[in-house]
Image 1 (cartoon, helix red, strand yellow):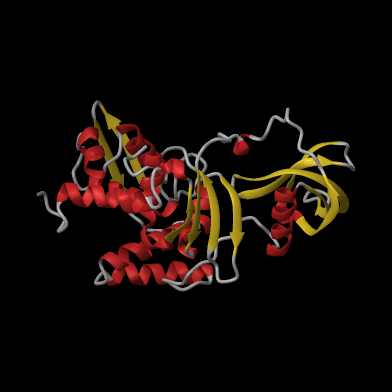
Image 2 (cartoon, rainbow, N blue to C red; image 1 turned 180 degrees about the vertical axis):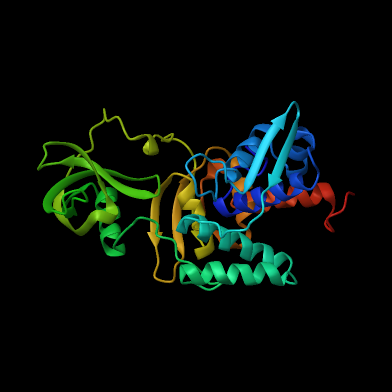
Length: 322
């Protein structure tokens, strides 16, 4: 993994575009040289190039792909075929391209050709370049999600109406909730389903109604929780208020509690792997995050600010070596 840790899909797309152009212009640079230039490992570089070479072809034999890459010894080569036909991108690929390209336009506003191309792709998607795009966090109805959070916190049973995606049927169930977790882009309610008489997981965005019941339930001590919930119970917790643009945090890291507000901001509780991890995350977020509560075990009220202070002390307050 690159020194910056986990990165967003947009950031990776930007890097892949830059890698492809840089290598194509140099006719077989050393893989180690290219990797060092972009701050990645050689394995990461090869994975990036393999991904680039799999996008945009029409045939089943992969002979017409617009990006061709290969390795000879310790060198890597990229050949860009003539773009004489429009690329057939999936909607997800097109959206990633528009988002990454918009960021590049921000770096070089004078690139009119790029801007015009982005407008065409964005028009096909029904959006405008630079338009803020809402990301579905998989919580479904915000009221339902808030009810589920409440019953999990209070250890109370909940009556739910759940839609079966395969059969299109609606069932009424009473669940003794054990937890909420996020996995592969969707939130799940985990608990004992009285109707099934067994442990079940329900996708939250398929729960169309939820009503808390007055009865208190106990969570068994010998549970084997889903992988997404297997965090150290003693790990420090960090509660953050996140700007709408920082939603990638709850998509990328296990989130124990999440409050989605009407204005698009979020309040998230994260289990912290280490103080260093928290520092890197907060430095990356900058003004997009505000610490609501930090566990004393993290050694300070604002790990990000303290890390920034150490960096400034090392390099000088003007950003140059002292």
